[in-house]
Image 1 (tube, rainbow, N blue to C red):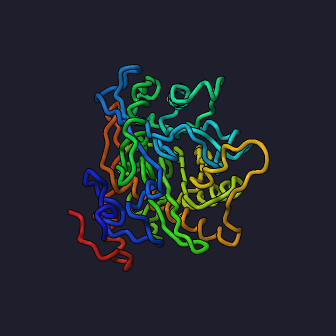
Image 2 (cartoon, one colour):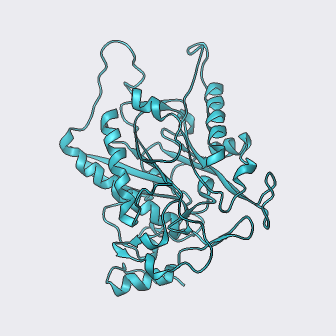
Image 3 (cartoon, rainbow, N blue to C red):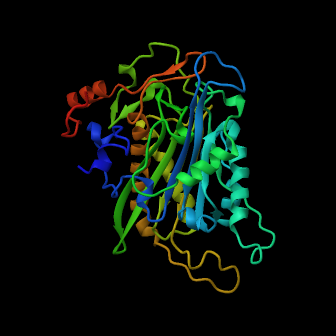
Length: 378
């Protein structure tokens, strides 16, 4: 098994490294960055402990930046689609995506009360990088999304600044990326265990060509009793032993592909990607904002042609079910990765979110003949 499948760059375990089985063949890093050109960067803020003092902390938050075409090509547009499975959340730019089937610039993910700031900083960053002679009056509708980290973080203290957004931009890179309590996922929970940032990918051949489908999640949803891993109900095996985050949060899912898809096909892909949530037990609860974005890095030759006849390539509909399947698999694995690459975290007022008990998970999977052949975690 590739090292990139087993652990993150800093040595945190990943789900496959823990022996959790998944369907489908991952890309080289089993990450959204397996889609050529995609880069991801983080800025993580962890400061202070003890009682909450609004404006001072404790701080458990951050920013994630996803560049569809890389930071150096960060002003260019991509075709895209959007789907809201449960709308108790925010993703700016979604109306433009539904109207025109595209967006420009990096995607930012953060906490609920910093979403507007990351959007505005992104617009300023984009303006600073365009040729105003060619685009004399630039305006932007960046994609910025959020989930709520107020159980651990001083969310009303507004600790994310423009400097932190720029730091996430500067950190963006391809290849293997970190998971767990990093970037916008720092203060998040999943099934009332520690959650946060997770990723996965699939590679497949379509119409005789190799393509990739990658997923990135900011995972912050689910009540404990609903949890399933590798098809095995596990939530009831891990009863709540202390006051924990109430499981009312949300998930942002970003799906990338280098397969040529039109905007309406990407909207369909975003909708199907949401099926990755129930694989681990998610139900799109009343309090949850479950928002999905899908984009394609293909057709760059045509996307900025605004007059005359425009030629594009796209997969025939008969090929799409395999793309849907890959996205669902990748979203499911990304959610579990966000939990596995994590530890117990203590935040404001001494509140804790416990880490997933991996050894116990392995025991349950082994009992059901579902544990892959890897060395047990100690």
